[in-house]
Image (cartoon, rainbow, N blue to C red; front, side, top):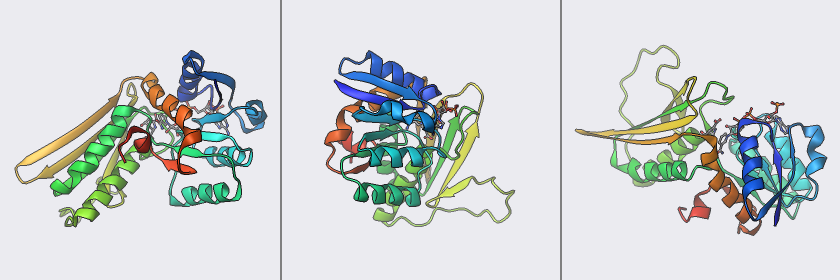
Amino acid sequence: MIKVGVFGAQGRMGSEVVKAVQGAGDTELVAGVDTAEERDAVRGADVVVDFTHPDAVMDNLRWLIENRVHAVVGTTGFDDARLDRVRELLAANPGANVLIAPNFGIAAVLMMSFAAKAAPYFESTEIIELHHPNKADAPSGTASRTAELVAAARERAGSAPMPDATTAEVPGARGADVAGVRVHALRITGMIAHQEVVFGTHGETLRIRHDSMNRESFMPGVLLGVRRVAGLPDRLTLGLEPLLGLD
Ligand SMILES: NC(=O)C1=CN([C@@H]2O[C@H](COP(=O)(O)OP(=O)(O)OC[C@H]3O[C@@H](n4cnc5c(N)ncnc54)[C@H](OP(=O)(O)O)[C@@H]3O)[C@@H](O)[C@H]2O)C=CC1
Ligand SMILES: O=C(O)C1=N[C@H](C(=O)O)C[C@H](O)C1
């Protein structure tokens, strides 16, 4: 049995993780906690899953790495500086591996992979992400990661800059610039998590669309991470792609 702790256990995602861990045959819930003060309750866990808040996750990761507990992180808000800090913590403390994935939905990971594959064939690519209005960060971790993958694919292919004649703009009208790709974030009551990657070239467009219909849909990916994190070849793994043979 893999002993699992959950940080953010009462949240929208954490409460699903608690159910998934309790329902799987090979995992056992040690504790679920919701504040930094309660972290001692997960001592004895092999793996802790973190779905908390971008403001909380770095201190949680420090605690887990210093206490040699493997971490499966779904919380978003990671930039290069944060990832460098995680690498420093791992270098200073043996024993724990960390898996950080902006999206544990298998179809979402495929959507990102298909977008990267399509990118070199189109002049223009923009991303529209749509989420529930309780989301703290914008753009979403998934949209940022997709933009980075699209930008890297375009750079490898030597793509020309995307055409855009805009010279007069109401601030924000063209979205956020993530690695040179425009990302538009919508916050809509009734929605959960959705993304469309829009490609265009002369006479043809392509839209790659992903929809999360509920939060249970993320659980197969989370459990895959829980089962595999201890045996991953790298101390820090970014994205679920290597676990799915997509890297
Ligand atoms: N990678 C993926 O596949 C997915 C990632 N996410 C990401 O997961 C994160 C959480 O999303 P969601 O579940 O909707 O958010 P919620 O606000 O519903 O849940 C967050 C939970 O974390 C708790 N929390 C806050 N600080 C701490 C802390 N220091 N230690 C332990 N628990 C803490 C909160 O408690 P309190 O309310 O008392 O502050 C709350 O219960 C977001 O960053 C989101 O983007 C979401 C869906 C999928
Ligand atoms: O906050 C959410 O809900 C989600 N967050 C993740 C993100 O920022 O990409 C994953 C998914 O989009 C749901």
